[in-house]
Image 1: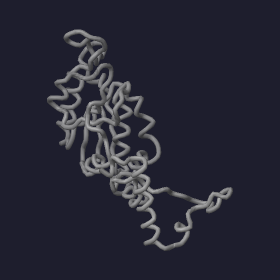
Image 2: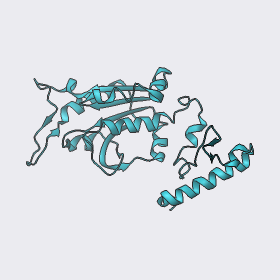
Image 3: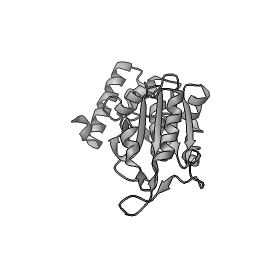
Image 4: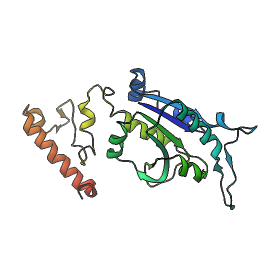
Length: 224
């Protein structure tokens, strides 16, 4: 699976993709993550990527040309399943969306900055707009990293234990059950006896009941 991320601040994305699961996925050749500096696609002498908004108002708007030039170059090299714009007014990212995107082959992700991007990019190129929450960040780089992480870990072969992703919170529309590890008794705080019983059917039943109860208390909206 290939991701092409368009940004004016590529340095913000160096660390998230250079460690842990995302690093291993790239080393295995399961995922490709390419970060493109939009300034490389600017036609202006000073490599500007933003300008004042028509109609006045505060802030600067990212220009159409650098985005269009980079997108067209990438599209000339391969077909893309999605061109995603990370935006606070997009559909809120959830596990279902991550699952859906994990079976795609090539995805372009656009990172906005400043006041936003020229609306014509959204109208002409973007196939989907995704938000990571009802708040505003300085740019789309961190949301892009969140999206890539959520998707890549679902690709077969990325996790050493592929069943792990299937039992994550939200996979079954429920939060995950409590988890424990050694020691079984820490300062009088003991692991539930059922988890030490070795009775797999009863353990699975307990985990489901715990997940249901946790969801009922913390995220009752998921049960609706």
